[in-house]
Amino acid sequence: MSLVVQVAATGAPEISRPDPSRLIAGDPEHRTWLTEERDGLWCGVWESTPGTWRVVYDEWEYFRLTAGVSVLTPEGGTPVTLRAGDAWVIRPGFTGTWEVVETTRKDFVIRL
Image 1 (cartoon, rainbow, N blue to C red):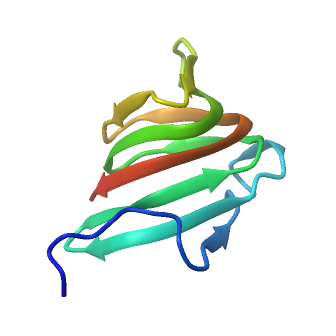
Image 2: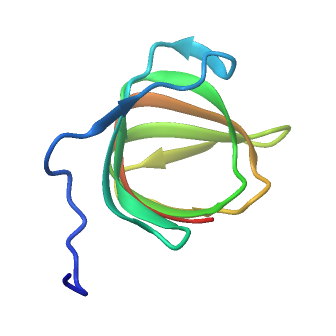
């Protein structure tokens, strides 16, 4: 096992959709390419087609958008437009909505 692993969207992705109870608009399809999944750490590449859904974070997430436009809106807060090149950290306890305006791709690291 190599101790250095490239994060890339290679191979067949895992396909998913938001839980129907959280879906607000559209029919977004998510594609995830996991590079690492162990010891409470997940990292890889995630992509979604347009749509809006409710999010609830119990984990830490660092991400950098590499393509597209999304809007992250904290519950009761001001919407934040996310664009390619932007990097953010979402802390545990965040609730709100994620809207993909233009198909969005991000590199991510999640720590449970």
